[in-house]
Amino acid sequence: MGKLGYDDTPLIRDSTYCVHDPKRPAPRVVVPADAVGQAPADAVVLFDGSDLSGWSSVSGGDAGWKVEDGYMEVVPGTGDIQTNAHFGDVQYHLEFACPAEVKGESQGRGNSGVFLMGRYEIQVLDGYENPTYADGITASVYGEYPPLVNACRAPGQWQTYDILWTAPRFNGVDLVSPAYATVIHNGVVVHNHVELHGPTGHRDVYPYVAHAPQGPLRLQDHGDLVRFRTIWARPIGGYDEG
Ligand code: MG
View 1 (cartoon, helix red, strand yellow):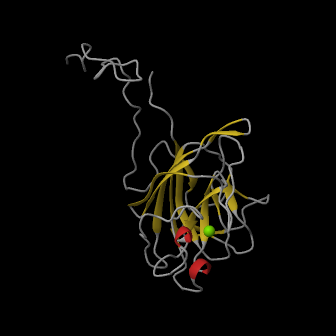
View 2 (cartoon, rainbow, N blue to C red):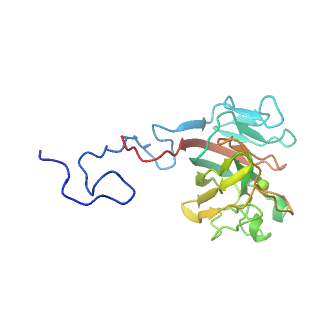
View 3 (tube, rainbow, N blue to C red):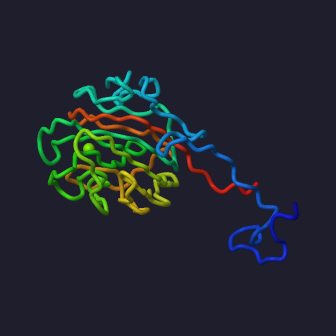
């Protein structure tokens, strides 16, 4: 086989490689899962349906939610839970289901939440034919951005979130660069690299407060019997420049 590229080409901007450079390292191989949504070979599996060993109560101690039939379910009153593993820039996949038996309305119906770095909430809600304020519907960046569209499935059905998260950067107490989120709900893009302006609040806005470069994935106990399954993460690194 001949040389795999060209060395008589111009340099790529901001790179030490030329166009089609044969010396540029090949991307690392990741074996994808057999089915879309399942964990690829290099994923950090955060919940495989068997137990909550990778999770703790946010208020301390063991996670109090129940596990059965391959999913976890909120036990109201036990509080939010979070992963013991912490992440910075990361890809998440998770699946959730709101109760098949519809109770309540607006924010009182199938409410939970996915808190990135424990602070920034992607809302979980039964938003299927359930009017509520736009920046609090399912898949909203709560209190800041409604989703581009409402891609909810009916109550009781499993739904997916795929989230690409860029962590905020701090220099001491100063914000250097904000957080960005891209969110795909049931295969539909609902946020495209939106800039967050601070941590999530309720009926208020908050400025960034400097925190560690990595943080946990936190799930909310909002008193509703929301279920989660198939939760995994892949830290996002830079291009392998060898
Ligand atoms: Mg919530």
